[in-house]
Length: 117
Image (cartoon, rainbow, N blue to C red; front, side):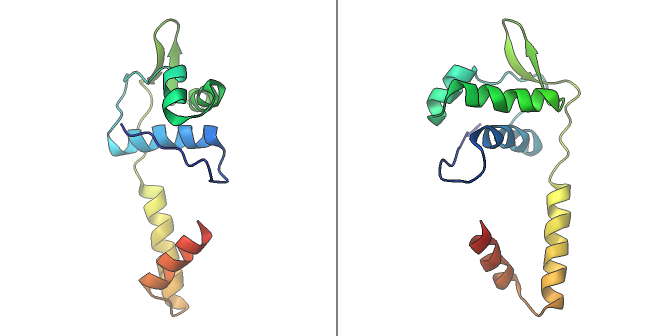
């Protein structure tokens, strides 16, 4: 799986780590019971502090997505299920419908997204 962090983003680094894992689960790059990289190794690869990675891991443990196994690291929890991108698709669809009501086209919406990102 390709791990990426945007150090210039206003989003907290630990949230970006967590989002990468959720994205990997939703796209099928990660699967149930798959072991994640050790925090120190991932931190070095992403140029972040080890505690940042651990905070992202703990965030997902608390949400039931990850489980920690003593001596075996962090793994995707058996009860973790990909929820797909359905909520995002629904929100985008609603945004496009709203934009059309205001006379905006797809390129206008894309420009707005780029402007706000």
